[in-house]
Each structure stands twice: as structure tokens, then as C-alpha cells.
Image 1 (cartoon, protein in one colour):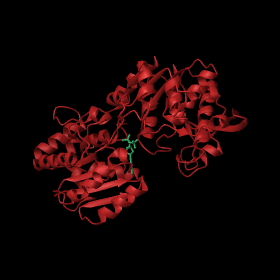
Image 2 (tube, rainbow, N blue to C red; image 1 turned 180 degrees about the horizontal axis):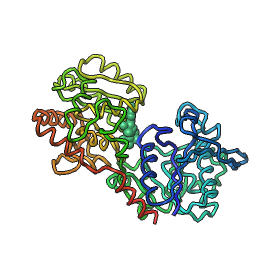
Image 3 (spheres, rainbow, N blue to C red; image 1 turned 60 degrees about the vertical axis):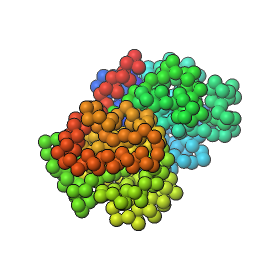
Length: 448
Ligand code: ADP
């Protein structure tokens, strides 16, 4: 078996969220068992020298009436797709011509699959979804597995784009790409894949309901005969507090006291519990529950640091509010190193997500002996339990409400008072197995 794994972002080359982490660590694990090629765009911000990326080959593709020259680059680990329309941008997403940028990427993946003669393709999220349609059109016998990492992002565009990217109007119907008189790229992945997965068992159930289905619940129900939920994992060699180069004081269960040295970087009084939030500042991550609770948090004997960027209004609101409180700090931005130092120094991680397909932060936190406070939704429901015997042990709340969240934080503070017991829980969580080994084995079964 040989597999081509395609993703619009891939750590360490590009990353906006968990997809990049998964696109790095899942193929690495799969390589232990099968031949794996990875493919991703060569965005202009990727340091070609640093990653030893060199020219591989080029070819022309046809989209609508236009021919585009695609250049492939590679290093020993990954194949990179370059076309200036796709790659010469400051950010990865959010442009008017994203339909064309990712259509180019999809056609380039299909062409590369042919060149490499792979028999299995693993496509991820809407940016790669059209590739499924084109592979079937080209009668490529390769089998396609399509993973939805977040149903909230579907790649919805005006119907006029279809002719520009050469997709026949015969696909503009409910069974295929049509979505309320627009074009929905994600639907191509759902309709034309052989196997459909999402990133946790609970989310696989949730997306078939009206509440979480983002308008596609009916369509997903129809395709549920091929839908599976495979829980993500993390790269436990990268997220390893004993070897992590980003943190000052490395530690493991046996040298747990050193975690406090990491905490000192952020808080003056290490006796107080230290809470962090790391993530995109969007509604999905429960940012409004955090903002609504800020004044309550300010009254607690605890310290808070929030790291993130995203919705401009949320950034501003958080910045303005946090200025008022001595015990709450907001750091705007995306900072991988700082995030590791925070995971290492914190006692608690806040994850009040409104919905969460899987979530990686809670798994990373667990590895660094940091206890998670989580809303019971999606992957959080599969990984955080208010039960000291289950991995990982944390604090959970069921109703997405300000008060329930605050109560969970207060329960956490209460537990923290019993230092010995708290340490026992942290150490227990550090032993939880969130490695990619289990997930990789499940994917292998599905590929077969
Ligand atoms: P998402 O929905 O954003 O993909 P995940 O929980 O799946 O959420 O993955 C988030 C990943 O991105 C984690 O590795 C987390 O530590 C990282 N991350 C999110 N925001 C930031 C930030 N501002 N700085 C550093 N790392 C971040």
C-alpha cells in the first residue's frame, strides 16, 4: 500500500491550528507500516533553505479554459505544490480567490497521485475535497479517505466559480456540490470519497444532528454508512516535557517539582493556581464564555494568562477587559514556543469550547501535567472526565453557560488546595496515552 496524504497546512512548514499538527504526526506514525507521501502548498513564508526544499518537477493542469503551470518541490519528507496564485500570499486562508487557489491545489494533488501511482489518498478538509471529485472523473482507481477536521469550514462560494475551475454544471445539485444555491467544496469530499472520517467518535455522532451539522446533517446522515470517528492523537516525542527545547526547566513525573520553576516565569506567587487558555479567539473556542466570566475570574485567588489571536473584535474586547484586572493577562498572537512554556507552567487549561471536533490542547496539557477544564462536547467528551480513574482527569461542565463554567473553575481551585492530591492527578494525567499509535492503527484498518 502507498498513500498520499494531502493537507493545506502541515507543521513545521505552516500551521493555523490542529490540522497542521495532525498532518505532521499522523503520517509519521503511518510510515512505520506503509509507504507515505505528504503533499502541501509551498506558501511563500516557508523557509526553503531551512527545510532543504528543492525543485522536483513541473506539469500543466487545466482548470476551465485556462492552463496553469504547477511546480512541485520536495525535501526528504514532503512534496510541496507551488503556483503563485496559491502560494504568494501572507496568510494561508481568507482571500476572495480561495476557490481558485485550492482548486489548483486539488488538481495538483490528483496529478501527483497519478505520477506517484499511489493506491490510496487521504484528503483533509475542504481545501483538498475537490480532488476526490477529479480523481473519480479521471477514473483513477485509487481509494479515497476524506477527513473532516472541522465541519464549520466548508469552502462555500458563489456558483459562478464552477465554470472558472472547469467543473461541469451536472454537479450543481443537492447530491453533489450545491448548497443553498452556492457551491460547497466540502460536499465533494463527502460525496466522492470511499471512506469518510472525522476526528472523534462523539463528533462523528454530533455532525449528523441539526445542532452540530452546520447545514450538512442530512447529507452526512445519507453518507453515514461510510462515516467513522477516529480520535486524533499528539506527537508525544514533540510534546514531551522532559525533552522539550522550548521550555526552561524540563521535567517528568519523577521531577514534577520543576514544573513550578516553569510557573515562576508567569506568576509571582506560585502558591496560587494558574489557569491558561491557548487558542483561536473565535466563538468555537468558547471565547464569549471566557469574556463573560472575566470579572468573576478577577475576584478569584488565581492567575490567568490567555494566548491567542483571531476575531478582531474578540481580540480588542479581551485586551480592553484584561487591562482592568491584575490577575488576568492577555497575550495577543500566535507563538508556538510560548505555548509550550505555558503548558509547562500552568496548573489548569481552560477549554470551554462551544463545539470541538477533537481538540489537541487538552491532550498536550495532559502530557505536561496540566489539568483541563472542558465543556462536554465533541472530542472533549471523549478525552476529559471528571473522574479520577479515567484519562484524562479534569473538570467538566455540560451546559454551555457562564455559571456552569465558573463552577467548574471553582471546583478546580478547591481541588488545588489539596496539594498532594492535585499533584497525584497531574502525574496520573501525564501517563495518559494520547499518542498517535492508536489512531494510526485505526486509519490503517480503514485504508485496508
Ligand atoms: P483548532 O480548532 O485551532 O485546530 P486544536 O485544539 O485542534 O484547535 O489545535 C490547536 C493547536 O494550535 C494546538 O497545538 C495549540 O497549542 C495551537 N495553538 C492555538 N493557538 C495558538 C497560539 N495562539 N499560539 C500557539 N499555539 C497555538
